Length: 446
Image (cartoon, helix red, strand yellow):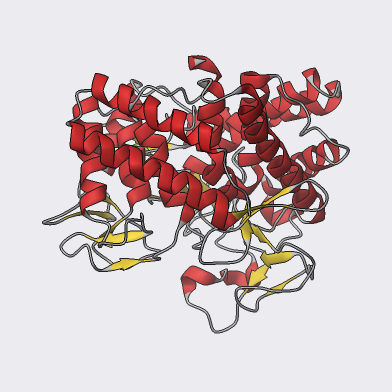
C-alpha cells in the first residue's frame, strides 16, 4: 500500500488548525478534527491504495477487495484539494498527482474492457460479489451493474487534475478508446429499448439487486436522457432515468469534450461529447422537474419518459443534494434550493431524524440509518461555517466509538451502524473538514 509523506501530513495538520481557528472552532474540536483528517488520509492510503506494476493505481473500497470506479475517485479527491492548496513540498504534491494519474489510467483500462461494469478486480481473477447473468462474461468485473456515475467520475477527475496542475500524464494510449466507449455507451443508452446490448439478471435476488423484464429494467421512452440500470447505491433504478446521474453525466461529457479537444486533439470526438451533453441538459430542463410538496418546482429523482416519476434522495453521490458539490448547479439556484429543502424534510422518504442524527439515508441500508456521506454533502452544499462545524462534531460523536466513519448510522443509537470500514465515508469527512478550514477543492479556488 502507499505511505503519504510525513512532512505533507504535518503541513495538513497545521493548515487545518489555522483554518479551523479562523472558522471559530473550539480548540479541542479543531484538534480532534485535524487528528481525524490525518488518520483518515493515512488509513485510505495505507489500507486501500496500491501502485501496480504498470504504474496504475488500484483502490479498494475498504471491506470489499474490489475497485468501484465511483468510490475510487471519491476516495482520492481529498488529495487533489491538497495539491490545489499548495500543501506540502512540490515533490510531495507530485506524488499525489502521480497517484491520481495512475487511478485515471486504471479507469480508462477498465472502461475499455467493459463500459457497463461498476466494480473491478485487480486482475482477471473472475472474483465477484454474487453470481449474475449478463450478456458478457468478464473476468475483470467484480460486478456488472450499469451506473451512469461509473462513466462520469473519471472524466470529471481528469479535467479537475488538468485544470489544477496542467498534468496530462493520465492521457495514455487508452484514454481516447475509453472516451469513445463512453460516447458509444451513452448514445446507445439514450435509446435503451432499441439499441442497448445490456441485460442484468441475478436469479433469486431481491428487486433491489436485479432488473425485471428479463434484465432490461423498467420500460422507458426516449427523451434525451440516458438510461441506467442501477443507482449510485448499487440498487436497481425504480424508473430508468436517474436525474442526479444525468446531471453529473452531462457535466462529465462537457469536461470530456474539453479534454478531447485541448489535450489529445480529437475534435470529432469532442463534438460528439458536446452534442450528447447538450441533449441531456435540454432533456433535464424539459423533463426532469416535478411539483414539490408545497406546489413548487423541484428536481425529480427518477423518471421514465412515460409520465411516471419518483421523488426521493439517496445518500450516495451523485444525489440531488450533491448537485452543487459536483459543480452541476449553483448552490443558490432557486430550483436547487427548493429541491434541497424537500430532500432535507420528510417529503423525502429516506430522510430520518432521531436523538443523535438527522439527515439522508438510503434504501440500501436499514430504516432510520443516516449516512455520514450525506451529512458531509449537506455541509458542503450551502451550510454556513457554524453549521458545518456542528455537522463535523455530530459525526465525531456518532462514530460508535470506532474512530471511523461508517456507511449508515442509526439515528437513536450510534453503536448500530453498517460497514465499520468504508473509505469513501472517511474521505468525505476529510472533504468537509478541509472545506471548513479553507483548503481549496478545485481549480476555481486555486
